[in-house]
Image (cartoon, rainbow over all chains, first blue to last red; front, side, top):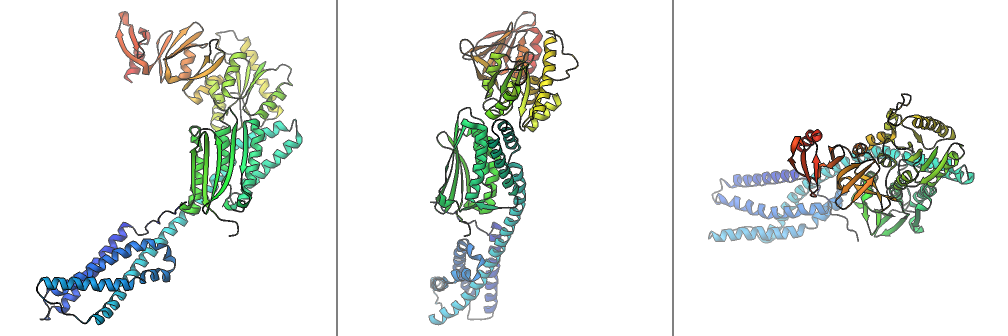
Amino acid sequence: MHHPPAPRDLLTRRDDGALLALWTLFWLMMALVSFEDHRHNADVRWWEPLLWEGSSCLVASAWLLVARRAARRWQALLGQPWPWFGRHLVWMPAVILSFVAAVYGLRHAVYALLGLRYAHEGWAYLIFYESLKLLLFGGLWLGIFFGLSSFRSWQAERLRLLELQRSLAETQLARLRSQLRPHFLFNALNTISSLMQVDVARADRLLTQLADLLRASLQAGAQETSTLGEEVGLLRLYAGIMQERFGARASIAWALPDELMCATVPHLVLQPLLENAYRHGVERSTTPVHIVVSAQREAGRLVLRVANDGRLGGALGAGIGLHNTRERLRLLHGDAAEVSLSAEGGRVVARLALPWQPQGA
Amino acid sequence: MRVLIVDDEAPARDKLRRWLSELPDVQIVGEAADGLAAASAIAAQSPDVVFLDIRMPGLSGLEVAVQLEASSAPLLVFVTAHDEHALRAFDLGAADYLLKPYDKDRLSKAVDRLRLRHRQSREQAPGQSPPLSVPLLPAVQLARRHVGPSDRLLVPQGPLGEGLQLIDAAAIHWLQADDNYVHVHTAQSRHMIRRTLADLLEQLGSERFVRIHKSAAVNLAEIASLAPLFKGDHEMTLRSGRVLRLSRRFKDEVFGRLRG
């Protein structure tokens, strides 16, 4: 079972610093105002306003830390302000009760220690009054949180889009360069050139396969996705040409359930993997190599595998094709897609996992 | 002309065989599907010409070429679909190559050139420099320049030298010239190959090996100690315990290399 990784915190260390500064400033101001208000009141000792604001600040800070932690959990909701505020505000009764209990408990304790008595309004009025104050200031701080997080989320999204655009252009170029390598193309042509001397019909069929493949690869720039069924069609063309070239040196098996053929996949996403199986498996081996192409649905994901006999050591050059594929999937699906290459008991397995998306869904 | 065809893809071999066998003065003496088999066939058949595919499993065509004795190697025609770097090197050295796919016309042009070269190499007396009409670097040397010093050396295998095997160049302790042969000494074994010491050193590169007298060279990493003898000669002890003589003529070179 695959768990999606915890979302990255949108707020940076600098944001936290700014929030802390703002928070400090806010409480200094509250303390100052309270101090000024009571300066000329003979009934109030000079330290009393500071104790009142200080105890409030202490308990409010604790709740602020909790809210800061919760912000990450609910940052996915930033796009919908009402649910976002709603999720925070349902905690308000708990905040109010705990706030009043903790703050007044603290104040009573300090007064008692000094041998004094803390006189204040009746509890019902207090709770009403503090609720209003907390709603007002709590709402203000939630607003600040919301604004800052939204800004950061917008920034991250814009960055991702820019990166996506840039790399789309790059991958298009890279794809045109790498999809049908010149070496493959010229060798295929040479095979046809040899075959047409002895079997015109077979040469003709091979030529048509090559043309279909070429056409699909030229469309690669215009088309971003296709169905797994279409992709497999192209893979079979490619494998057919390779079969003519390598004969008994290569064999291929397909384990592809029909019900998966409607899955949406990036166009030509499997081609580099099959190409690697031939280039690093078949072409470098003097003994016959068996290739297996398979697809499976695993917990909401489509898992595609291309496995070939051989060892990983010889596949160091596979880096570029695999890297391009990984980069492309990362941009399309973020952390939800994976590409890996591993050795499993005398076989090299290229594995590709992406979110399951049936066509038209 | 006796011709060997080397390509790992059967259709590519078929095509060459079909067209070459139509030529009256061409005799196909064998085919090989990978580098090691190609080297064995060259050793066994000594063909005049080898059509050598570049990309093959095991040893590539270029890696086969560098293992051949430059002066006695067959004429090589590299056959490739697309190898930009190698092609640039061939152009510089005016080596023969065929690009896949090719038609009969191109093949026959290549064969014409081969006939000319083949005749010239036969008419040329041994030891005489090639006539000016062939202003090209032998394919073997071209391949060596392109591939760089060999990390592996092809040596005969089995009591009668019937097969070939690759050994690591780093595992070679020293090389000993003996008439037309060189003895290759490693920790476990001694291999005898039909090469000149100079040609072998050109293949293995001067980074790793240094000559110590007219008919011997050592792996620099294997030198344990040196002790002076009379007349400027030195006694060289290898890490294996083997004692060799370092002649006065090569002393400066060896000392320079050891100081690095």
